[in-house]
Image (tube, rainbow over all chains, first blue to last red; front, side, top):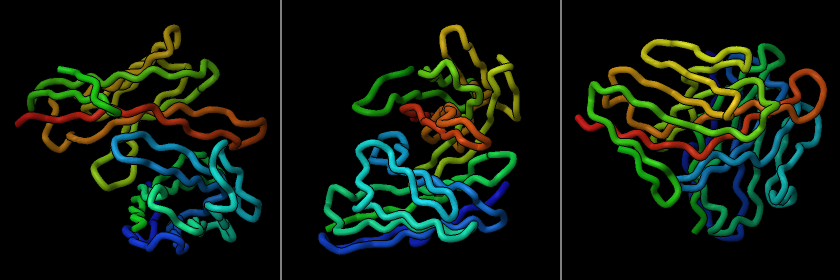
Amino acid sequence: GAVVSQHPSRVICKSGTSVKIECRSLDFQATTMFWYRQFPKQSLMLMATSNEGSKATYEQGVEKDKFLINHASLTLSTLTVTSAHPEDSSFYICSARGNWPYEQYFGPGTRLTVT
Amino acid sequence: GESVGLHLPTLSVQEGDNSIINCAYSNSASDYFIWYKQESGKGPQFIIDIRSNMDKRQGQRVTVLLNKTVKHLSLQIAATQPGDSAVYFCAENRVVYSGAGSYQLTFGKGTKLSVIP
């Protein structure tokens, strides 16, 4: 199957700083990328959907000014958590989908800890 | 047996036994369902999928059953092995807006499977 990578796999940052997470589709062109957040012992919650070259569509309750998403190319999307707070500590997972057959491939996740 | 924890239901099975993990979905318009396996600290891994025009699909050691009448999905794992220990999520493919590719996955709560050696 197709491969999606994320970088970094783990990051620790101080409260008030910003952190950027990269998501790459390694062997296919991802026209759509999804960002999920997962708290311990909970399910994946969709944060936003982005199509290449367009603004991201955020789910209800997700602050677009806090979670900046850029999908500038068909192989790269970035999520920037701005002015991070301890409650932003979570496991962030990206997913990528091509044009056809619309299967969605998941990255390995990024563990963010805000101190 | 099966128990409901604070957030995540847990299913404990003896190695070699069969496991059945259940999932209820919410949208009767969903036309595609997927089971994922997630090991600790990793992203979801595709196991098996099924379209709404089917009620059963088999893979290697896994079977998915779909009951559209009661909006219920199950994953059966035969001869469960220690390597099957993980959290299992069902996901339904939901149309967001009209147009090609305009849908998104919605994940269920998940079930933690623990295999007792």
